[in-house]
Length: 221
Image (cartoon, rainbow, N blue to C red; front, side):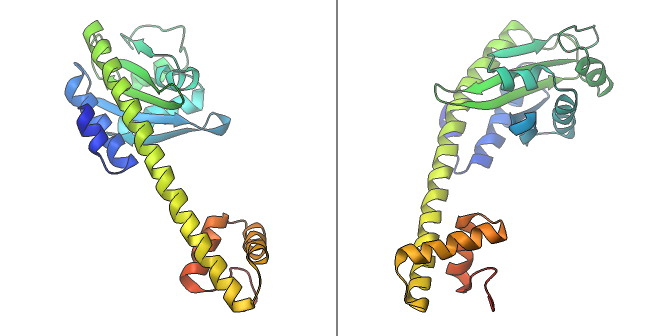
């Protein structure tokens, strides 16, 4: 499993395999997903094998609580609800509505490495009591391997993006310097001004210039 995760060629593929392994390896797991929490406690579902996962993630964002939400938010190893049909004081707003979705039991594992809190790996069963101590142990091992693979894939993707951005910016600077006979510092200032006036990231402005030879927002461009 660990080799399979590290062999994936993109962040999306890595996350899809994490979810697939959860369903295959963890006793009782029928649905699984990965969520992250951004600014303002906004939840993003990065991978899911069912609509239930998307709905549950949106619900936890709406009520501001839940085992998966809290696992990601507080970097806690695991939160578990053994029986969603029972009253749960910790997540009193989430649990009754999860019950209406047909959820029977839930586990949320924090995906983290020494350097990063990456979100949460979440597992669902329609049956109360589906997750045992063994399920939790295997889920924790999966989450540990998944966090390392996810972090590695994300770092690789960020490096590739940074390298592509440097290439586009360099190409755009070269075009502007040649066309307008200006030094590099002035060409960069032109890109920066276009980025600010268009409210578009500098790397995207540079890519447009590199691909089309035109400066977004410029007269005739």
